[in-house]
Amino acid sequence: MITISLCMIVRDEEDVISRCLDSVKDIVDEIIIVDTGSEDNTKEIVKRYTDKVFDFEWIDDFSAARNYSFSKATKDFILWLDADDVILEGDREKFKDLKQELNHNVDIVMMKYNVGFDENGNITLSYFRERLLKRINNYQWMEPVHEYLELNGNIINSGICITHKKERPTVGGRNIAIYKKAILRGTDLTPRGLYYYARELFYNEEYDDAIEYFNKFLDTEKGWREDNISACHNLSICYNNKNDKKNMLRALLKSFEYDTPRAEICCQLGYYYLSNKEYEKAIFWYKLVLELEKPIDNWGFMQHDYWGYIPCIQLCICYERLGNIEEAIKYNDKAAEYKPNDPAVEYNRNYFKNIGK
Image (tube, rainbow, N blue to C red):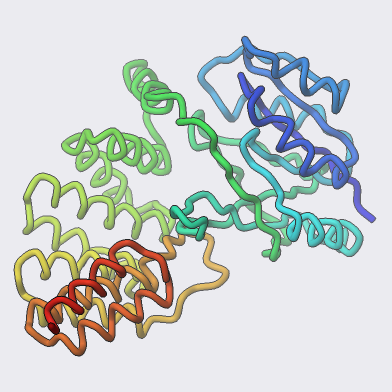
């Protein structure tokens, strides 16, 4: 059986840290906590779980802090979590089985990260992360923000999920401020850095700058395929928010240079034509989504609603606009198969009942 060191970096996490550690304490053999400047009771709480608590001066670099935490590990494998992550009971049992059965020839175990949820708790966003890493391989974190590990060796996907249970908003402007400071210092962003800086600009609604940096990223031609497709999708939203329909369409079509059509791209194309009142064209793209095979082991961002609920609810709208109420009801019912209690589904049902009177 393998042994595991849990390595975490924390700061002011008194409201969530116990929940995280309680979910993992009987799985790991060592708990290492690196505190980057807590001003609450975080350190006092974690000392109930471990005596391996270290201070690290914050230098606007998540990789530096994580690498320091990894340097303290002594067991066969390293597991990393954030303080607002938990391992749910079903996944805890799978993890215990993995610990018993894992072949020592494996270097990295990927686990699905469930990070987005709707009001009913359904998972809306997930992606794989490298969670369990062989310590002797000395994997190093890279990039000051949105840090990552360069993956090499024998890598396997597991059926274990880590669940992100955020209780409070991310510190506003923290990530984008780190990027802007780096740029002011004259630091050249890597292709990955360009992509994630563009995403930060996008989420902060700085659309002009987001467009600039998404295009800079794509122009490097060095991005990971999944990031390229995601960049095209986000670019299209930026252009739409600026009412630049021509470049919105160009960004979406550019995504086809990287791989076969993805659900979020097709849905955005459907939205493009729906907003132009070209309902037959919109229907084509929404229906195409329902014919696509949803990836299972893809490591990119998986926005689950695009693979079923969204195209169905949008097809309902398209057919209603065309006066085909029978088809509109059919696709509203299909949307209900994905989200039975969805307010839009219920609204449509009442609407169709009223027009049938």
